[in-house]
Image 1 (cartoon, rainbow, N blue to C red):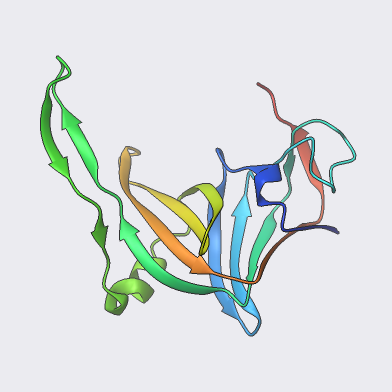
Image 2: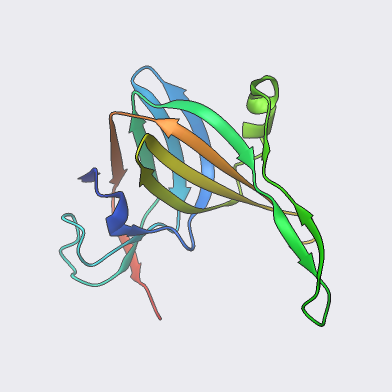
Length: 156
C-alpha cells in the first residue's frame, strides 16, 4: 500500500472522480478514482505522472465548516456579460442530503488554505453538461492519501 502524508500539492485532481464519502471515527474519507500522482510525490518511484488505483483521501480529524455553491457569469456569443450569479452559502440543514449527491461527480481540486482545506466538487447534469459546483471548507490536522497500486502513466 502507498501512503502519502500532507502532500496534497503533489497530486493532480483534474480527472479525479469522487466515488464515496464517509465519516470515520478519526476523520472524513473521500474515496476517489483517476487521482494523478505527480512525479515529485514521495510515493512515486516511477518518477512520472501516473494514475493511482482507487484511492482514499483522509482528512484526519476532519470537520466541514462551510459549503458554498459557487457562482458564475453568463455571457452572450459576443462576450457581453448577461448575468452574474454570486456564491451562495448552503445551510447546514441541507448538507447531508447534498453530500449524498456528490459520488459520481468530479473532485477537481483539493488545496490548503490558511484556516484549513478547500475541496471542490463539480456536478454533472443527467445530459452530461456541467452542473453546479460546490466548495467544501474543512478543518483537519493532516491529509493522508492511500492507494494499493498504480495504473497507467498519464498521457499528455
